[in-house]
Length: 119
Image 1 (cartoon, rainbow, N blue to C red):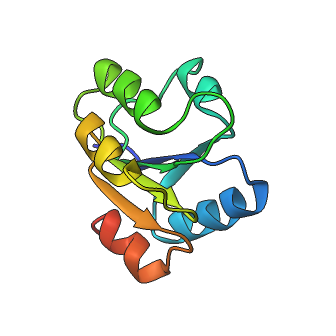
Image 2 (image 1 turned 120 degrees about the vertical axis):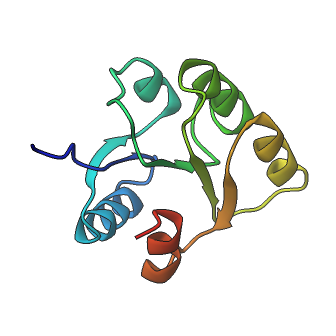
């Protein structure tokens, strides 16, 4: 019997950050799907049973708590880790209230990433 690959979704508009996160996540044994915007993610066929989503807080277009609310309506058991390099007042609370699992600051170390993915 073949096990399903573990999947991580990354929604990040900075291509360099997306590439770095993708490499780190793959090195931990996960498959990765990347999206450069919330709209691209919402328009996609999201793979079944992702382990976690790494979501940049500051995306062009829809982002933050609005995107989390839409995602939770589609996939209520999705674990969402919101990432930000620029924390703004009230954002943490808004994201967690919308359904995010955690809220972390960038840059993300490999140790923190492994803990988020429960490796």
